[in-house]
Image (cartoon, rainbow, N blue to C red; front, side, top):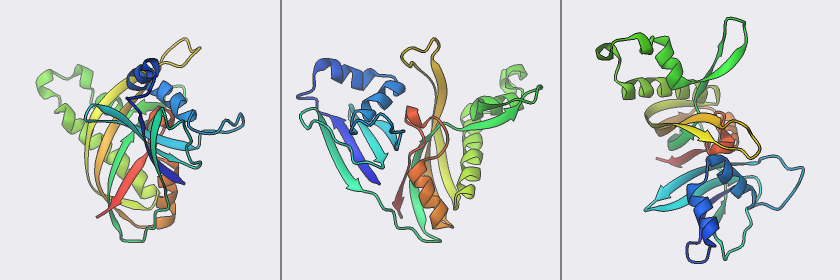
Length: 225
């Protein structure tokens, strides 16, 4: 595996590409990152990414099975081999942008995914509660996100110690040829965890957490404490 930090070179990039990079939908970002790998018509997505803005500059953090390759006149890429060495009881700080959903069955028995924030609102009858009786929205988001993450980390060999949940953002992404936009939401998580079983947790680092990975969600970044 490889982990990379990627930036568009602002001094040499064509203006139209720079605009696309900064203002694109998350689906178009996904297409841009595909271009960093050798063309293979049979290849499936084998990378996770996260978009961030630092000091007004857009960058991408990329975890991939293949090493990215690109024109150095257009892209700045810093790549390192990624082989985390973990042990039981190890404490890690983490960051995660995820698309947290739960699966519910409707009256006809059909299962569908639901945004955890909207689901939490539905469970308490948010729309019918008087404004004064509604819980503080950031608190509802924190509780729903913490519960969702703790359950999923436990399935993959880690215990959640502490987490801050914020940055709730519903998004619409447009795919070429699609009649309707693709809707999803994202939440940002930052906190600490403890590794209980290194093997499944390492696999989680490689494969990501939750759906919407094509839209910049799922990359779990960790560092030693």
